[in-house]
Length: 259
Image (cartoon, rainbow, N blue to C red; front, side):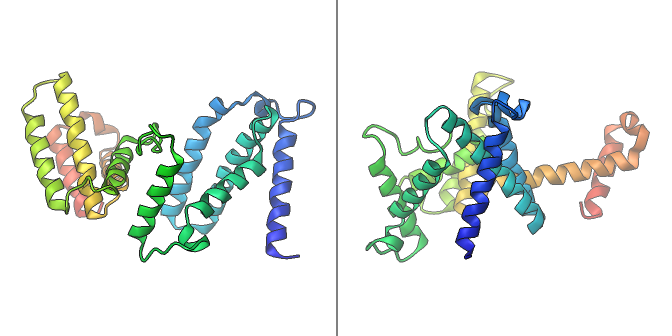
């Protein structure tokens, strides 16, 4: 039996397990209570756990977390099957067709000399698939983390030429937005708006430099967490009694030990 047959059998077996969990007679009470809405949080969490596994470099962790994402895909497909909307086979056929249609340089007679041309062709194909009045930005998920969403917006519009030639223009925009933000006062609507514009501009600088803005901010959050954990460890039970100067001193020490 070849590898493809084994994969098909494994997927069919897994699908039958999920169907059993959803069986009104003898199924799992928790699984039977779930809906597409109640499962949203778990899908988001599992995707982030995949990212954590990738960052850890552990192949076994990645295998496990990808399985958890697959669980969500099959579970949502089972719910849709029960309501006679679609099933897992429809999901697989749909994504297979999409991939073939959007890779004419592989499955057709279109040529693409580099990844930039591939992305340009991809965008043109997606444009032809969209309703006439749909925006090219409408394909970006509404609930995407805001920093990531800002960078994706920039990537999208850059494909039709709405972009700076290089990072210099993006950096100049950041300087402009900093001045506008500093000119605001207090917790005013204008301060919120200008801060948002500044963050959006920073995401574009990251994009022009080839930096993932979301990952950069995550790295800084992790660094802050590690340094503050050092402060907690050194201060012990006296943490709440230390002055700001003493806390700053511990913070500087955390940097010196490589945190």
